[in-house]
Image 1 (cartoon, one colour):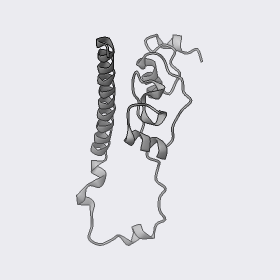
Image 2 (image 1 turned 120 degrees about the vertical axis):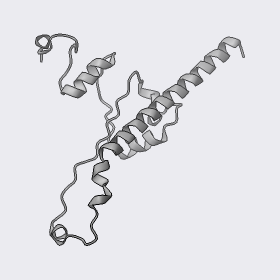
Image 3 (image 1 turned 30 degrees about the vertical axis):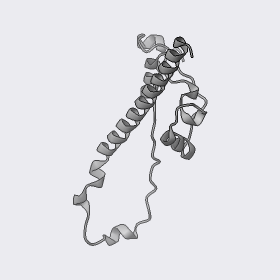
Image 4 (image 1 turned 60 degrees about the vertical axis):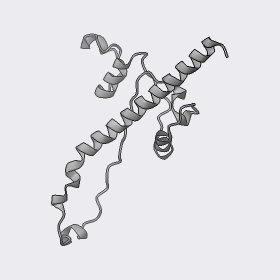
Length: 137
């Protein structure tokens, strides 16, 4: 193999490793944050010895769905395993198989408009423009 090809192959391997590490780190931070936010719901001080009869007589309350929203930056369509990538992502593959995949979307070439759309719920023409310029829709 030529030295140029070897360097390109090593660079591609490093990029794959960095991408996998970034996705894993982001997923772990999301899960740790969720665990921290729900810690008070699992407090051991709330456990009683005798079950409350009034609670048992009530009908079950419907629970809201669990939503995990994963937003990544600078990612292509085939960068995740369930889109037939070279990078193996078994946890994300299972989440995609068990959940809902939003496959029809529109994004901006930079991350700021996508983030402002997520936060405000409005189509963002230019997040840096004054509000009166963005009221085009």
